[in-house]
Length: 77
Image 1 (cartoon, rainbow, N blue to C red):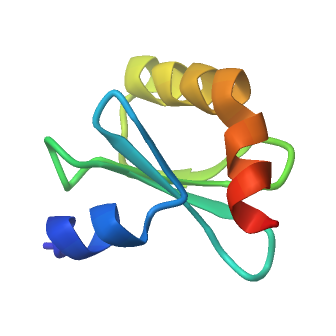
Image 2: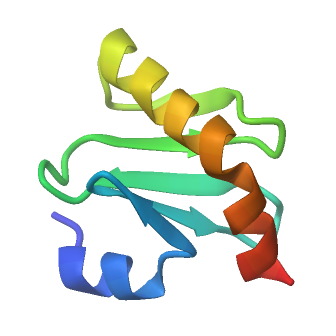
């Protein structure tokens, strides 16, 4: 089980309980802080590469990412 507190404090942004963290290779790791077994990895274009989320939750996460992507860019700069 991931350390939720450590993930939250290291995240570039948190939207509605989902922590979004950039990786050096341009990917974005997403963790549901309320259900830490639900996670995803997105590529730089916002496509799901890996996930333990169901399709509905993955779609919600993609919406959050696309709606707030500019804040991820600001955090990376």
